[in-house]
Structure formats: structure tokens, C-alpha cells
Image 1 (tube, rainbow, N blue to C red):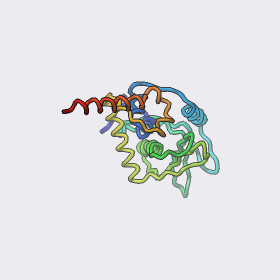
Image 2 (image 1 turned 30 degrees about the horizontal axis):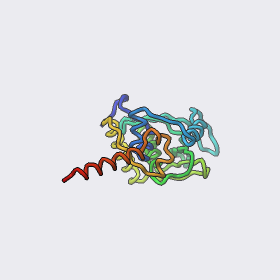
Image 3 (image 1 turned 90 degrees about the vertical axis):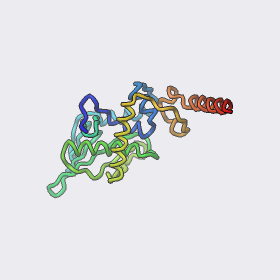
Image 4 (image 1 turned 135 degrees about the vertical axis):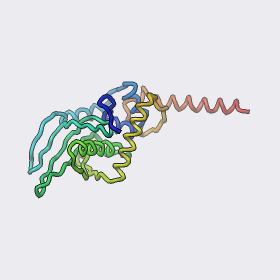
Length: 210
């Protein structure tokens, strides 16, 4: 399937979707957004690399804020940085994503980076084997290998994201304390309230059932 330009979804939505489908729907379907300390710090970190510039150091050329698009996957967005390594006459393409904080327990950042690599492969006609995510708190890179398993997970996530957006439906709230505590949309989402209402309805229906 080849998507049209009007059907392209933002690459950033993949990270939102893997982290929480409801959060993804609130942002990309309902256009809800609230800034908190975590999102502000993340935006400030991205602002430092979100300029279309380039530099060359130690034989590595780095392009910043590179526009990406995949008509096969139906995605559009930007890569924070793409490094081009010259080795024995061949060029190695190496995407680098910048994130605040620490590595997450889910693969949400890995999926987003892998999707960038898939876009670049389509755009440049090359194979990209790996990349890295630079996390702000440990201030070091985490290498990410684009294995066949991660590629399949990424493509499945892309398909699920398109299905969610096409449905126009926001998934119900599910309260997960650690995850919800760091979400800037927690007051809009109100997962505790939704959980309590759901529990009340289940109990009420159970009592009425003969």
C-alpha cells in the first residue's frame, strides 16, 4: 500500500502510541496537549538539534533536523541527527535521536528510531543496520540495532497507529501509577476517575444480574 501525502502520520506519534495508546489518541485525535517539566525539558533538548545545520568532525558528517517521509509506511517527521560515516569508500548512515531523561522500560524510543531508519532506507536506497539514542540524564548514547524483530515490531506499531487514527476513537483509560505519574495529560485523561467509574458500573451490573 502506498499512502498519499494527506494520510501521512507524524513519526513522533509512534512513541506516544507505544507508551500509551490513549495518550496518543488524546494528542493526535483530540488535539490535547499540556506542558509539564518533563515535556519542557525534552523540548529544550530538541531545540538544540532542531535546526537544519550540518558539521563534520573526525571524518563524520552530521546533518541536523533532517526531514523524513515514507509513503510505504505513511509517516512524516524529522530526525534529530543523521551521521554519515565514511569507511573504505562506503558510506554508513547512522540516525541519532535525542531524548531527555533515562532509557524507558518499553521499546517506544527504539520503535521511533527504527521508523526513522526505515524512512531513510526508503529515501536513500540504503540499508541501515543500527543507530543510537542520546539520553539527557546519563548523557550518553544507547546503541540500537535494527534487528528483524525490531523492524517487525515497528511495522506492526505503524499499522496499529494508522488503525487507531482511522477509527477516530480514543481508547478507555487504564491507570498505571508509574506511567501515568509522568504523563503531562494525566489531569485531562483522569485515569483514576475512569477506573473508579468502570469499577462502579461493573459492581452495579453484577448486583442487578440474577
